[in-house]
Structure formats: structure tokens, C-alpha cells
Amino acid sequence: MSTPQISIIMAVYNGEKYLRLAIDSVLQQSFTDYEFIIVDDCSTDSTPAIISSYRYGRIKYIRNKVNLGQTPSLNIALNFSKGKYITRIDADDIYLPEKLEKQYWFMEEHTEIAVSGTFGIRIDDDGKTLAVLSKTEDIYFKIFYGSPLIHVSVIMRRSVILKNGGYNEKYLYCADFALWSKLIRNNYHIANLPEPLVKFREYGNSIGNVNKLGSSSEEASEIIFTNITNLLKISVSKEECKDIVLMKWPSSGTDIFGLLNAYLNLIQIAKEVDNNKIRMTTFIYLIKYLLKCLLKRGFYYKYNRHVELIFKDLLIVFRFYFNHPLIILSLIISFLLVLTINKKKMRRIKLLFSN
Image 1 (cartoon, one colour):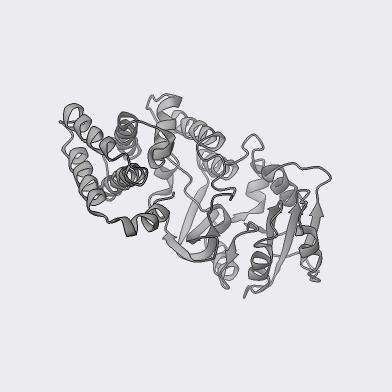
Image 2: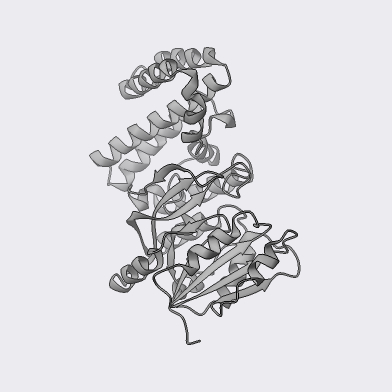
């Protein structure tokens, strides 16, 4: 086979449940000039048999001799690849049929772009749609509070990624966020196609949810701290960066002061990004983001039968944030919405606000 235009890389460990769906979604692509590199990280289930059952020359199967973890396994696939571009897929995700074709031509027409992602459809264990995740906010601003790209949606220029050292194996859970941040700090351009071209699965045992409140949040906090201290003239602590990461995770135990101070830090960051101003679109986005965080917090309390904590938050805000009327208004709105939702809708709401 001649040198492919695209190398698709997958690292898998015990992925038998959804692996066929993922592989089939690649093989059904409208764009066919690709190689598909699968690194099996010493799976103990039927993963090896599933991969071996496919008799396609485009599939390159590598099995690690010892279990290394996802990030080192991705680097093995990356170094083995030959394509001009690299794309990613996990064993529990799905490509929509025109994903490769649309991204390939986008990159060909926009040579200044190093990495491009897409919107994504978040699905549950059974493949049912939970939400369509868009990444419309400013990518440069986004790296100061979270990853600007859906990892399994990206297409990357292989030469750029290799030049910048590939995935940093220091990060077990946030290697993708670390890579996008490094590229932006090194003045590369990143974009998002405003179209959902992947389905990604999030459930209790998915790697995206494992250690969300442990190692993953620590890694994300460190990356955000590095981004802020390297790119902005703002002084923040690592603990404040962790509060930013945990804004959307009420189960972390972050108090209302941590959440609201994280929001105020994001406002300050937004001003710094825009030369001591703040764009109206960014301001509106941050208000919506705050409201979502407050709603998640309220629903979490209600679901766990701690409604009294919602009233406690309300009293604290009125006492200590009286000079921030938008914070007070956001909390009142979230308070009223949470209290008026009936019990039948609580489980569905818990799913919608799970990330």
C-alpha cells in the first residue's frame, strides 16, 4: 500500500464491549486513503480476537508486551504512523461516515491550521444521545479553564505533532489537553469544525470519567496554571486553578466561595485575553457557564436530599457577593429552577449535567 494520507490511531485495553462498533465506523468512512493503527495494551478479554478477525490491509495491529497505559500506547501508534495527518478514535467511540473526508479537505484548504477538532455527540452505554457538544467558544480563551477540543474528533498534522514531542507521558488522563496547550503556547493555530462528526461515549467506567476528581483534575489544574503563568500577566495559585477545573463538579466538595471565585478569575482572565476588555459574547458565555455550574450544584444537592445546602449557598451569596448582582441573579435563577423540577425528571437531569 502506498503512503496513506491519514493515520488513524487507537489505544485499547479490554475494549471488547464496543470495539467492533468503533472499528466498523472507521471501515465505513467515505474517505479511504488511510491506515488504521490499533495498539492493544495487553488486553485480557476478547479484544485481541476481535482485532484479529478483521482481514483488512489497512489495519495495523500492535500488541504491547507489558501494560503501558493509554498515553505511551498512543505515542507508539504515533511513531509507527506514516500518514500526513493523524486522527484519533477510542474503542468506545464512533466516527460518522464523512468524518475523515470533511476534515481532510478542511486541513488541505487551511494549511495554517495544525490541529482541528469537530463538535461531538455524547452518548450513553446504549448509544442513546445525551447531548450534542459544541466547542464554539474562543479556543485561546478556553485553554485557561479546559480542553478546547474533543480528543477523538481531532485531525492533526503529523509533522507538527512529532516536532512538538507527541503526547507528554507525564499525563495519564490529560495528555491531549497538554498537547493542545503546548501547541498554542508555541504559536500554532487550532480550529474546530462546527459540525458533529463523532459520537463519544461517557459512562461510569469510561476513561473520560475515571479519576475525574482525582488525578485527572490535578493534571488539568497543572496545565491551566502553566497556561496562565506563561501567557497572561495574572497571578493565580494552583489551588485557584483547581477550583476552576472543579466548577462543574459539585461532588468534589468545592464550597460556594471556590466556585464563585473561580468564575471571577475567569472574568479577569477574559479581560486580560482581550486587552483589559471583555467581549460581549465571552461575557454572555461565562454567565451561562456560571449558571450551568450553579444548576449542577443545585441538582446534585437535591438529588442527594440536601436541599438545605442550596439555602445555605443563597445566604452566603447575599452576604458576601452583594456587589456582584449577576452572581446573585444567576443563583436565584438556578435556585428557582432546581426547586421547581419534579422528581420524575431528576434522573434525566442528573445525566444531562453529568459533565
